[in-house]
Amino acid sequence: MRRLAIIALITVVAGMCAANELETYAVWVTGHVINDAKEGLMFRADKAIQGNTTDNLVYLAVTEDLAKTFAPMCYQAAEKHTQLRLYGAFLPHSGAKDPKHPSVNFLIWKIHLPSDPDELSPDQKIIVGREQKIPGYKVIPREP
Image 1 (cartoon, rainbow, N blue to C red):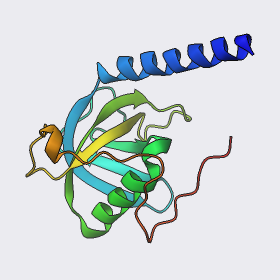
Image 2 (cartoon, rainbow, N blue to C red):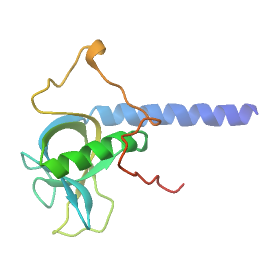
Image 3 (cartoon, rainbow, N blue to C red):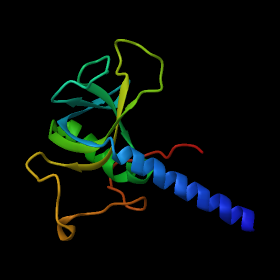
Image 4 (cartoon, rainbow, N blue to C red):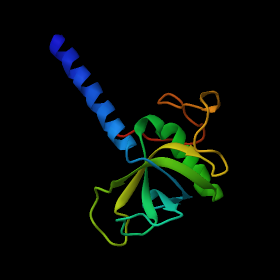
């Protein structure tokens, strides 16, 4: 039992360290979400992304705990051609290297319209989590 508790503690600490490390690379980016039939959700930033094979077009990634809320928001933005401001980190794409496809993913964890401020006071923030979802959009969980 003690060994299991130690493993659980190490896992939690490692997850927190990874999240904190990602936070150091986080940026706000403005652009448009695209729902490509073959590629899935993508994001066309207003400016070029350094080191990306497709200039300003990147794959859009959402953490599992935000998938049921942020993915539907992104689908709606793509349907309505709404410009968004996203907060997250650019990460290398792990798929096969192809100059016709993005070499970068943008992992997001904050989202708002460009007309809204990047930082809000605590009483104005809406925090979403794993159990919340937006009706009308089916998000299929990843297999373990």
